[in-house]
Picture 1 (cartoon, rainbow, N blue to C red):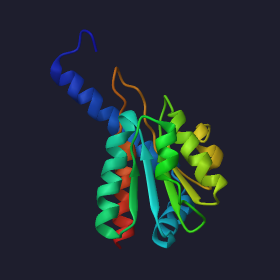
Picture 2 (cartoon, helix red, strand yellow):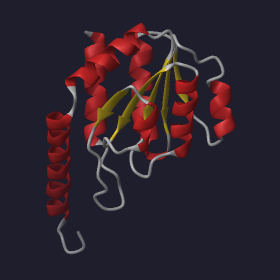
Picture 3 (cartoon, rainbow, N blue to C red):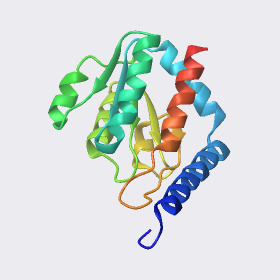
Picture 4 (cartoon, one colour):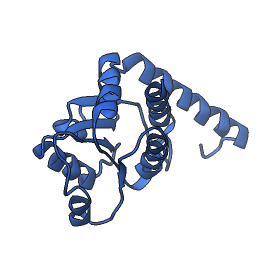
Length: 170
């Protein structure tokens, strides 16, 4: 973008976001989406974790799920031991939604492993079948997110989360 005008940058970034959303539509597994909706509706408590640049996605999901139903916990911390303390009572009636994109968060991965070890249902929102987030998940929601310059595009993951909220409302 070094020699691009402001309007060229705007058009280029928005066009790239449209492409990422279209790619997400083309590659999202409808069965995984339906499974995520059912899991969220059936779980006693839902834990949500997204750190660093993924935290706004987790906060958005937390806000709307909390309006739809109770027992929603957003895990926020810089310490892995504090994450485990917040998840102390997680069990087979519960679910965790881990949101992580490249540079994947090891803390989110460890929280998902802990939840899986406690027989909680694990949902991931990540970018690829090759994401380490899928190791402990039975339900993988994939949304394309690429580094355009110094910022990650979160347009497709946010659209996916928005669709999840709408489906849960219905």
